[in-house]
Image (spheres, one colour):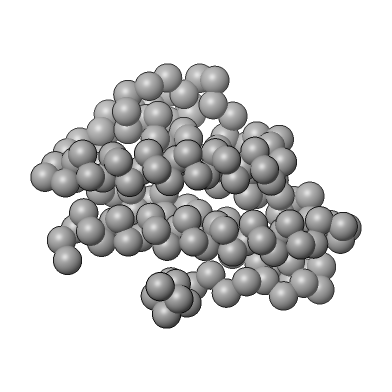
Length: 155
């Protein structure tokens, strides 16, 4: 398996894990205290939009990285970007270590390898899914198992 195939697998995992969290949140929306979990889920989607736009050299000025999206809006955004990431990786198979120039939210310029940005997107999502899992546990809800090994066993 080459590096592009490994990244495609990681993005498949990310999509699967986001779906597992979504199902749990949807099934428990009547529980109090899940507003923060929904906000984190929307942030995962907002961050994917922001990073994709940076990679493509598009403006991020209108991107809200902490949107007030509900679950259906976040799901749609995540599905859209899952397809875009897959296509981007396929289109850059031979150049995944190319340098991407962008500015952070404070306007500081950076240059980062595309492969590092792609890994960051995956790790960022996992970080916030673990925060959602903590919030679910605090609400006495069993969070879904979203570790990579569960994905590996499920497919």
